[in-house]
Length: 209
Image (cartoon, rainbow, N blue to C red; front, side, top):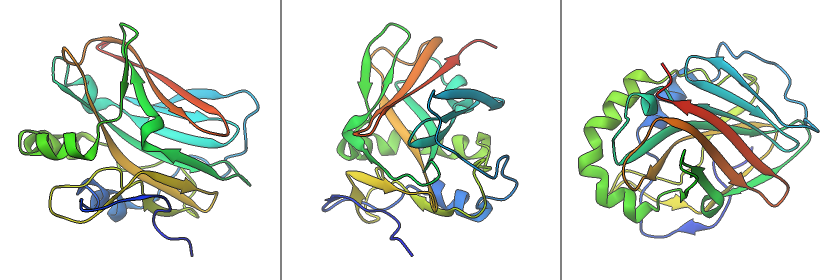
């Protein structure tokens, strides 16, 4: 069975953020689809309140942004993300290749573990609230084993990684953190991942309710 994460280890830092324990408890029950075939033309569909699912040639990705929609004006954008490879494919996601595009067009990279650790004390109460809001269903086949990206970790709890390698037998999850200059604003955002194989772009709207 594949290891939880495969990639370059970032030494001296922490293991998974506690949200992964919540995800593991609910696993992949109640998933909405049984096959995740490669899509020649990427598709993005809303599959729930504040939930978008992307299907591409190499990856399927689910993004939950309900808590982000409740956090306008906050310095940190939090997105719950789950990803798996399309049937018969593998894909590598490097943390340095993950970003969001703001409504104003600025590209903001995924926060570093150092930035997250420095902000963790101020983020803790928001992390608890985000766990309450999130939907634990991943909308992927239950045959796919649960794993973590391990891009982030609570201070003092283990190690993180710089990349994760996905295949069609596992689905990795994590809460992604972005430090937004000027705070989270209403409008059209885009979660992006620049892969070797393809580029992933997932638009979502904040403040539209």
